Image (cartoon, rainbow, N blue to C red; front, side, top):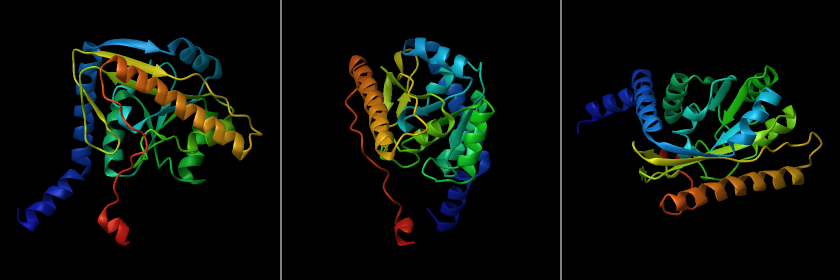
Length: 247
């Protein structure tokens, strides 16, 4: 392929037109899967009552299991998602906007920056936040510390969510993203609520972090096994791009 055409194609794939279009296509395809799949919900009986009581909460979802979770949301309370500025983040933003999420630009790996301030403000306004705690580049199914920071600062409950689906293609990506197929059987898992005390030490927070990660992975692997999916090993990261390593 001539360099000029290759360059134009790369620019198109990164354009706002393409990311918006792809996000909308993902939404409508996901809606088809959602409507034609028989879903079993685990943990819902404690999830929505807590949300109703506390008005807002922190919601975490593994990067590879994001696709079907937004359709589970009942839209009773506002929910804003932290989305990375990377190209896949722009696609996710287009998809989530179509579902009805608000979007906060940033990365779950950032520290006390504008995104973090906006997330805390959202919670204070009783607008819940969704964070992908193993994004944007992994390690997959490993909880980073940022959701616990917001739970500690706000006093709100922290939940983890994941899904498994019988008919799917497991993409050969770092996050082992599930490409769900219609007319299937699926399971949505939601952890128990975790409240992080305002006076929690670093050691305490690490214990909470590990407990949430362990519960979420245990639920995910159990549902995968029930539905006949292979075991997906946590801990894989996206490969660094060559130009990133050189900079």
